[in-house]
Length: 232
Image (tube, rainbow, N blue to C red):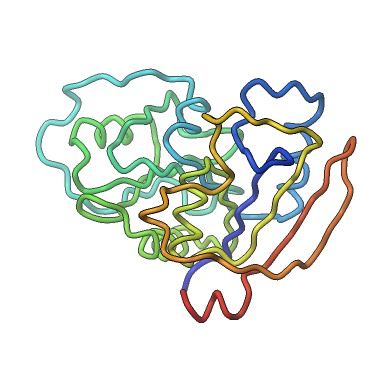
């Protein structure tokens, strides 16, 4: 069994998701208020986004006194919400074990250093493993449900993380908050990106709801079509 997964994105009208340089009052709050309506048990972000949230640049070395077993380290099984960091190489240090009032869970590969694991333990961060070198996202979400009893998760980005979850056939619903702006800067990613060589096939969706929200934004909600689920 796996949790119900929702990709919740904020996008320009031309499909870009990196909000750097966007000066729209209330956009971030609108994103958070729409996300809150899902009543999810946790939210998932990648390394880049989580490093911005953690406000921590590095961690002390030498904490590990020997090899640490690659088994889940569970600090809090009954948190109100979880902040799930997709961090296979162990690059996101945390000063504490919460982010935006959510208990932090690091998703790591077994190739991570013992020192990083010892550091996470020292600050009370939970962690699980998703593979030896690369992450098996199916295994990751099943472990999250088994260890933390999460039944609904929001994948919030960035573009690579959202694209990877969609490409793996794990997403049940796509939610896009389209803002009234156009951002043609070529170096800004699309809402879902993992590289054309890695993308297996188009993911077809079924529109379930359209709502005008905020000051000219449109909130679009889709479910994965039956055909897409059958091909996943």
